[in-house]
Length: 101
Image (cartoon, rainbow, N blue to C red; front, side, top):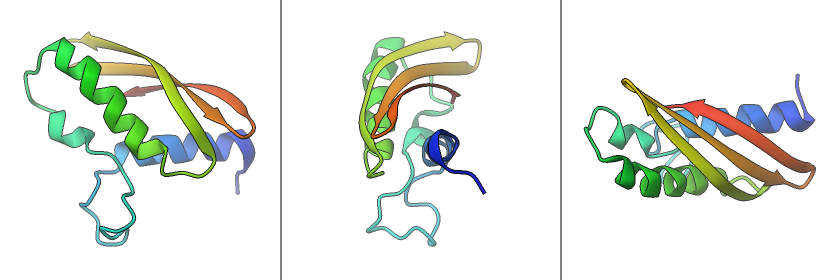
């Protein structure tokens, strides 16, 4: 069992890596997950990714009542990988997160 910062970090990663609307357990009314999967495998310009990735991640995370803001995104493309870092404000403080999509 985890709580506090570890629980929020786990929730962040799970929300980003879960495809929105794919799994019936979450239902369409809950808006759980992210739509980042729609971008994977497409050869999109970095300018478009710089606009879409922050929007998609913010939408996924701001559903969680513990998260109040998501900001300061840095997106780096290395080969086939896309590395994203950002800050998350919570009731307990600010976290810096990094994910690979």
